[in-house]
Image (cartoon, rainbow, N blue to C red; front, side, top):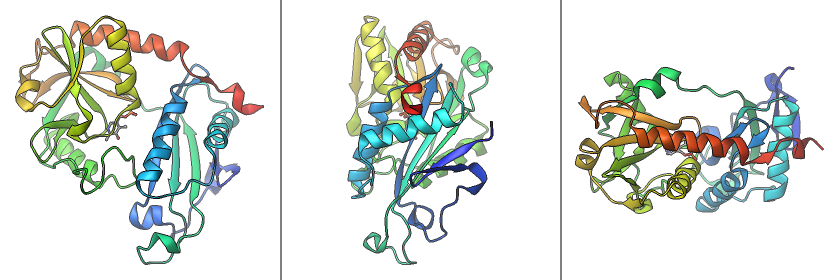
Length: 295
Ligand code: PMP
């Protein structure tokens, strides 16, 4: 089956799905997006992704031209039209076509497109051995400049950090906030295990509040762990018993090393593995059926 892309209300062959060079999503990164995953015929936490998309849009005063239920149908329809049961979905809303000035008021209707594709997973080796992290010098954008809980199309802050990661030959990078507290990684949230408790940076550290992060908090509490959201510095990471990342693509990815220093045993920890298994069990049963959208 050849792939189709949803764009402004229509499903078109992927090669014909185009946006204008005058689209402010392209010219200025003026827009918002979501990365969503479907497992075995069900879209995981679709409502939560849509809530975050609409909240992100409000954060940049962008009115989405579809209601949330219309958007839900569009997502399901796009996955179904591509014949996918396991998928990675990229949902994008841009400010739309404008002139060469910044002014968003001069843009016409927002552009909405949805790509349903397959997912590029970390190799199994990563889950067996763990990731190598560095601490990035690039500081996470402060909420007073652009709230990092807005999932905007402007990812240059994270991309600059990702370049540091690549230059260091590492797998991922920890981003600190302006006060030196751990915020998140370049495209994932971060968790620690310390003395049997599970700890993750609290939202005031300034980060994207991950859908996976929220699900892992739920899963950890359901498994009986004390789950704390707290402000902490790099030292807490380096001395943790376990460390792992969470994200739609990564699920739960163990960390073995930060800045060349082993974390805990230097291998994926038992609580990390237990939470990953519990998370996978959740993704297997929880979600919006894709067939709902093909009707
Ligand atoms: N932080 C950032 C900066 C991200 O881009 C992402 C999404 N890849 C995450 C955290 C994780 O969010 P989610 O669990 O919703 O994928």
